[in-house]
Structure formats: C-alpha cells, structure tokens
Image 1: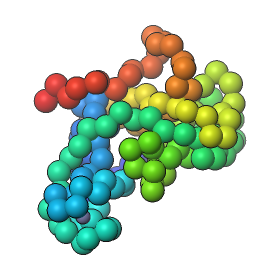
Image 2 (image 1 turned 90 degrees about the vertical axis):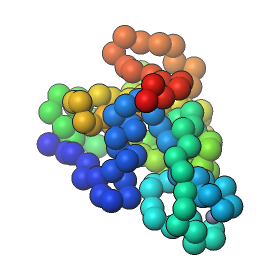
Image 3 (image 1 turned 135 degrees about the vertical axis):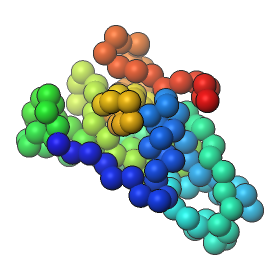
Length: 145
Ligand SMILES: [Zn+2]
C-alpha cells in the first residue's frame, strides 16, 4: 500500500493535514510562501518560517490516467491531477481526481481531504463548483487546534 513517508521538513505538514488543515510555509523575513515544505526560503535563504493555513484551491495544470491500483479500494483507471495552488502558484501539488467527469485544463478546483486513518490523510481534488457530498471531507475553514 502506498503511504507517504514524512521527513523532517514535511512531518508537521502531514500532521496538520491529518487535523484538517492545508498549510504552506511562509518566510519570516520576506513573507514568500512555499510548498512542498523545506528548510530554507528559496527567495532569501532565511531559515525562520511559520505555517500559514490557506484555502486549498487552484487550477488544473495537467493529469495522468493510471491503470495500476494505487491503494486497496481504488477504482482503476484513476486520474492523478497536477494542480497549481492559487496561493503558491510557483508550486505544483498532485493528488487523486474525485470529479464525476474528467478534468479540464485550467479549470478551478478545490481540495478534499481523504482520511486514511488517524495519522494519515491524503489530498484529492474536485471541480470548484462541486457541491458537498457525503463521501468527501472538506477542509476545515479554521484549524481547531
Ligand atoms: Zn524569504
């Protein structure tokens, strides 16, 4: 089974995600936001930073169709989308596609949290206009922690 391996830089990000928060790092010195997590600001090399919770929204950059099961219970073929987050347009985030139709290039999407277990959640994406559905968990608007 696929399971991400959090490292020193990403562990807190995975912990926040499991708690329902999508966060990016913000540099204390120049306020540049970055993703995925890393130790240094790519703009000014400053090590000091803080987490900043953001709305997990963006636009579809591209996608692939995978015919191999990714995790038990996944239907095949399934689609993995690359998303350019609105808050950190210099980065790409990938995740499963949960739309009821294929993605379209450049369309607006938002993330949903797929809870695997108490310690692990994954990020999938749906069309921004999708209404609430019982089988998906929206991100918390504010962290409860
Ligand atoms: Zn900086």
